[in-house]
Every structure is written in structure tokens, then in C-alpha cells.
Length: 125
Image (tube, rainbow, N blue to C red; front, side, top):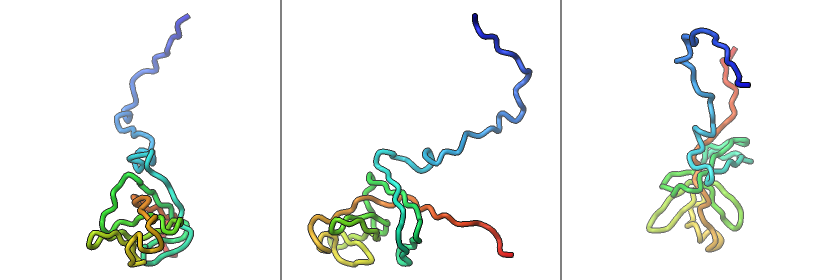
């Protein structure tokens, strides 16, 4: 037997102002297969990072000068600022050519796209 739907009258006048559900996936994950979250384990004033910050890494981006990047140096993940001079990649604050740091297997793993920091918002009393 077909289902009978009840008519409830007119649509709510505020229905035209209804918004979609907030989705952080839709807002921040522009290329989901190439994006990863990492959590910072130690602080760095030079890189403006605090312990516990959540970083969104995009492996599909090509690093540009001044980008915060994740690099693999001596089989260890490190964070640094990307720079390129005279055709060589540098990772600051280390200020040594990437590849000359320890071995030729050093490389840029991804570019930091977004930084999330948990912070309690309020006013002083």
C-alpha cells in the first residue's frame, strides 16, 4: 500500500535562511588523497609552533620560498622553512642545502597548508 504523507501547511518562513551543516572536511581538505594531519610534539619559536598544534600537510603542493614544510632528513621527519638559492633547496633554520645535511636521500615530504591551535578564548577578569 502506498504511503500517504501528511500535509503540515506552509513551509517555515525562515527556511530560506537555513544553512548547510559545517563540514571542516569540505572547508580544509581540498585534495583528500594527498592530505595528512600531523601533531607537533615540541615547540619552536622560529617556526611559530607550539606543542599540540595540529598541522594539515598537503603532499600535492610544490613548495615555494617561505613555505613551512615537512622534510625527511636522515630518515626522520623535520619541520622547516623552505628556501631555494642558486638552484639548491634549503631548509631553515638549519641553513644547509637539503641533500647535503646528511645524505642524498633527504627530500621535501609535504607543504604545511593549515595550522590549528587549540586556544581557550575569553576575556581577563
